[in-house]
Amino acid sequence: MDRFPKSDSVDIMLLLEGTFPYVSGGVSSWVNQIILAFPEYRFGALFIGSSRNDYGEMKYDLPPNLVHLECHYLHDELTMPAIRPLKGNAGAFETVRRIHELFLRPAPGSLENALKTPDFYLDPHSGADFAQFLYSKLSWELICDLYKERCSDPSFVDYFWTVRNMHTPIWLLAAIAKRLIPARMYHTVSTGYAGFLGALLHHNSGRPLILSEHGIYTKERRIDIFSSDWIQDNRNALQKDPTEVSYYRDLWIRFFETIGRFSYGAADRIVSLYEGAREREIGDGAPPDRTMVVPNGIDIARFAALRERRPDTPPPVLTLLGRVVPIKDTKTFIRTLRLVANSLPDVQGWIIGPEDENPEYAAECRALAESLQIAQNIKFMGYRNPEEIFPQTGVLVLSSISEGLPLVVLEAFAAGIPVVATDVGACRQLIMGHGREDEAIGAAGGVVSINNPADLAQEARELLENPDRWKRASQAAITRVERYYTDKLMFERYRQLYQRGMD
Image (tube, rainbow, N blue to C red; front, side):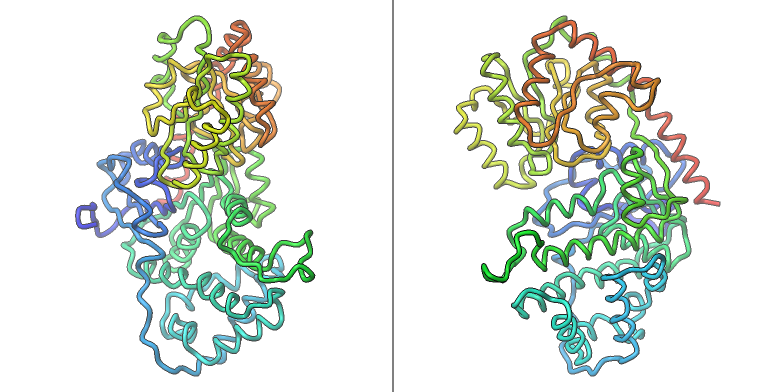
């Protein structure tokens, strides 16, 4: 961290969770793109990660107008206060009890108003500081009462430590907020911990906060929580209802939903990538009058030059460009390739993306390819510049179970490559069009349901085996991206947001 750029103040402070500059991918590329697009502004970036050991070296060169960078790790940095007996502030903990009641049953506007004053977290004299949360008698009594009133899991020990683990990062974020350099405005690219920090900074400084969501954070955390094996369920077979979510899974989901509402309530503008995401944000508590849609955009010329390097017929290569992680459902891509290879034995599947984020899952993917006897057709190629890959790609395949508006689809379109994707995020809008004029351009590939290798294989195979359809899809892709998804359109919208925030 000694070699990070440092400044006393910035124009725009970006609040980033698990993304730029340490994680490659669409969101990180977008962050880099935004910073470079506005050289007139001095940017800062605050990276929030889990543990330092979870990240390697930076994946991006820092832009020259990124004048301040700091990184914080929620599992590494928290300094526990000295243990000492504390009675606790009765008035403060009564307020905490009321806020917890609002977490469970929020009335419109009530939770936002209750959380607007961040004194509990930012003022050590508020009566509910970190030491009192950890060690006071009233804190213990509050946890015991909440367990008796609400918890349907028989283990008090698991409840106690879940509450501790859930709330502890909040005080680290509060400490970060207190000492962060001043900014004229804040811009977070998710809700979650980065969004919570943005809300604290907004309420403490009075400066504007922009929230841009590339994927719906609470939805993606819900997927992670349902698939995780570290969350306990201590009920016996007679206590379990198969129609109910286990208590601790539900508790974690409600926690992220709550800090999501806090983030929405603090944001002056909430930017989504497409209309469906905006409607989802409103359903999750975003004030409708603060929401707006700004689609991603790309540098068309950078990828248009690749069209001349394409062969006249589709190359027998299916490419998945993304991290090897469960949310990208790489296993479905491997199963898809097995089905395509049954009729096209020479087909290749290229998996372009890092494997270090979830090594166990990556190993399972390699084992699956071996068990399906398709390993000879699959290449795990790690990170590659898309410009190296696209001229040799016949069809880009996205097997994801969650997406926003993927930049990789726009980049493939600009290079003239059709796309077959699952019906998540804005993929249907991108491939089939949105609105009469857009739909008249034609299909730029195919859209299928999630976890459906048979349909993915059929759509991909029809494009590879039918050069005329492939060329029509290619032309539709080029026309759509050039008309609706240029970086110039995107930058102009963000320039207006930044200028308004600087006033």
